[in-house]
Image: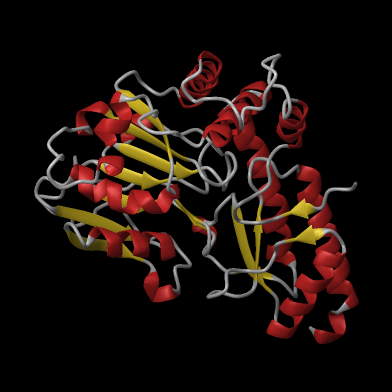
Length: 363
């Protein structure tokens, strides 16, 4: 069976090597006589799986010992509530609004804290990252919030916000492990796995220990407390066991490639292939400011909605699927996460060239 080139924004493509290894272990994990799906999360063998996953993630990101790594459920959206619930002291937070997910996170946080929107790119349909070098940070802000890579609109922060000493919280879901990052610059990093790390159902939280407090018992639901999950090493209840297992295999795959420096070079080459074509095309064009372009989610349109629809239909028929843009944005979006081989991007560009030539009468 021939696999298609899957450009889905999430749940997204996984490395073939990981899928094949998981398939080989589906019925019998390393002589245990059972699948990882079936084994107790309290078993010695599963403890080894989750411990190994955390160790490899710490190696990939060089995570310091004063940060906890949590494997949780609820996806990144649950973190929209957990962050303000767990960090609020003055009940004030500053949010940088660069797309739909940052907007939703701010709206959710307003249930618990006063939210100040200190920067936004909504004025131009989130097509750029605003200047974050000298933000009007609130004196009593408990934290400053950002969404690092904006899946829907195809933008990415190139410089971290100047938080003026306040805790930085980042939703890194759609760029997590796509390039090196300095964990020490953040108080909390969280990422839904289904974009770039593993299957849907797992969220990874990296949190500095001093931000974990027990002063929450009277008002925060127990499953939404970082201290509970940290004390129980992500095992307070049954964690997303199979998702964590697959994330661990992706971590190994990345380490075998040479780590985050190596995958970043590959991702840069892939993105440049597609952006270079878009910049010279007479039919297609990128929809975001060049200085804010994402390496993971390339958003683009053609000269007409009719051509957009025709392109999406013909692309799917030729083995390029999930290229339709987000429903509120339109156009096209090619999500070229870590697992997308460079051959897939080359093939897409060649198809776009063929399509453009065949439809040049419409230009």
